[in-house]
Each structure stands twice: as structure tokens, then as C-alpha cells.
Amino acid sequence: MKPTIQLNKRHGLRLPKVESHYLVGSMPSRGGSFGSRHASIRAVSNDYFKNEARSTFATEAAFFSVIVITAAVPLIYTAMALVHLVSSVAAV
Image 1: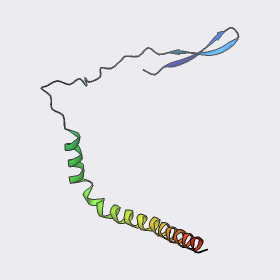
Image 2 (image 1 turned 90 degrees about the vertical axis):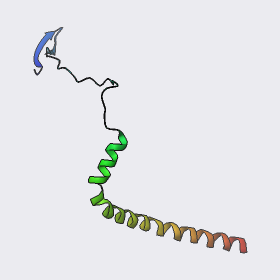
Image 3 (image 1 turned 120 degrees about the vertical axis):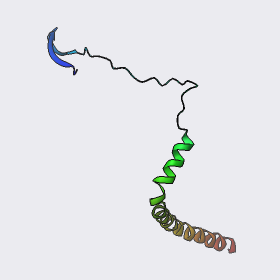
């Protein structure tokens, strides 16, 4: 049941009066018992990698390698420039 809002005048202010009488549904118990078996994290992840992740892995690995190479090239050139700077300062 949705709460209904009614305006209530108290001390010259118009405050909303909220009626929130609702029924609480029963929640399933999360308590563990020795008789019940749940799938482990390893079983869930193995199932995911066996069925779903295999199809997109090659594409994602290719994009990841392109991103790594793109980020590595400027870092290599920066390291080479620093080596050149240090060698030129040391030669003076």
C-alpha cells in the first residue's frame, strides 16, 4: 500500500501528514543450515567463464593490448628523453 500524503496545519505551518500503514511481507531466510547446499563463488565464476565470457574474451583482449601499447609509447619516449637529458647534464 502506498503512503498517502495529507496536509496538516500545525502552528501556522503546512506540514505533510504521511500515513504509512502497510503490510510487511515475509522475507526468505538467509540463515545457513548444514543440510542446504549453495553454489560457491568458484562454481559461479567457472560457469560464467565457461558459458558467457568466452565469446567476448578475444575482442576485449585485443582492445586491451591496443590501449596498453598506446599508453606505453609516450612513456618509452619520455624515458628516452630523460636519459638524454641526464647524459647531457652529466657531460657538462
